[in-house]
Figure 1 (cartoon, rainbow, N blue to C red):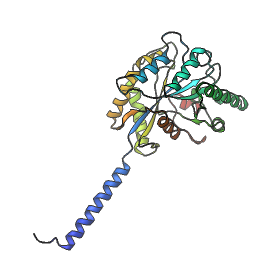
Figure 2: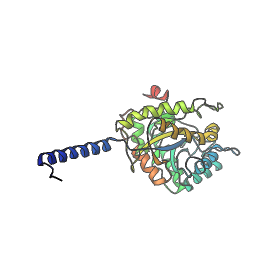
Figure 3: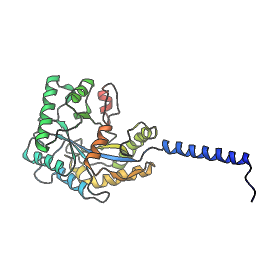
Figure 4: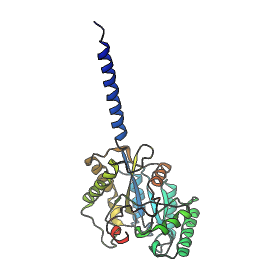
Length: 288
């Protein structure tokens, strides 16, 4: 066989180099696979029988999608029908012992709005909540979520003074908010709509990448019996709508280790009080 003409060899080399560069660029532009952060607000429940927090914990440990899922529980440490009871305190300890992330939601008798508190009152309730969780778990919480999603720059500054990072959400389950109304006919449509909106930020590279995955935060309410009874179905829905939207998930679509879950949540936290992330539903209109 004859030798390849020098000009052709140079052309082939340049063409190959260009193709490799384009492939590398495409690989860099490809968004990292998503991984769902499951979070639960308002708990724990103090119900003596049919306790929804217990059911949520049992389903996370044993389900048909991925066993031993770890979640973030934004707890109300002194709620009169939750963390302020012996049952509630025991469940907070169980959450920690089973490897979940225990975080702060409130440390008041009711679901009090942090944004409407005087600064000294907010500072006091944050100290109480951090102290409660440290006493129950042996660890100070690193994450907080404001009740009613209500915060401003001053609220966020108070959180930061106490070493708390504020985590909002990307997806939010509609059920669980109207007490006494335990139904949801649009579970899948709701998740599909919100993940479709999240997909735009994912494609634009506007979301953090942690340990090779893009965290997507999903919020439920572990005091709601409907959520607890249908959590396994929700897990299926999340994986299914991600597939429909061509958003590849990690090999394990949900987090199963506390340290990795906490890293992903901290990277997704709100840093700047002047920013205006999208809030769920009407809360966005109400507060912003």
